Length: 112
Length: 115
Image 1 (cartoon, rainbow over the protein chains, first blue to last red):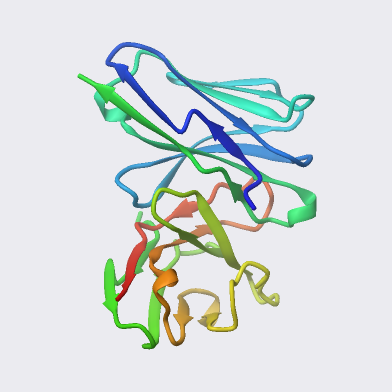
Image 2: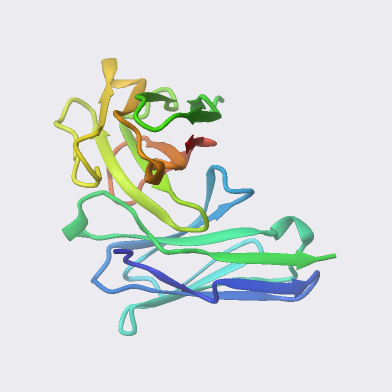
């Protein structure tokens, strides 16, 4: 079963708008990462947030982590058509060794 | 530098046949992972290699699946007697070490279709 559940499953926005997606997980984690996948191919690492961090920024990306609620959010500001992709959260936990456990992903469509 | 490469990009096979999928990790990366992604789904962990340690095979769905990593570099995932439910994209990733904060770098995947 998947550790992470993502919400929404799909998101359609206009270019320039912000996109927010959420990830919930079930067990205690060490880190949470967000990845992007274009066209069902390889994943690209976006950002990693440690369990003792609450917020992290990278360019137009902002990630929050609430360990009390076991949830994370990814915000993409000022979206571009090139941001169209699927976005996955992935967690790692001591109980799972070094394996990443992925959520089901959010498909984001940014319309020009 | 070169990223993770996988071959073939696409593979169509008949039910019951064996297939081999190849992964070339980034040079110098000691950890290598295999994942499976079914259509529209997230990634499912299959197996993980770290250096010369015994691999973590806990994600392999059945004994028809096996993988090896020769010389600490190239890895081959073998699926014997393929079934239609094996159809998926098989993704390989590598990381510099197996530390929990290490970023995993993914290859483009092999899309397997079992007819």
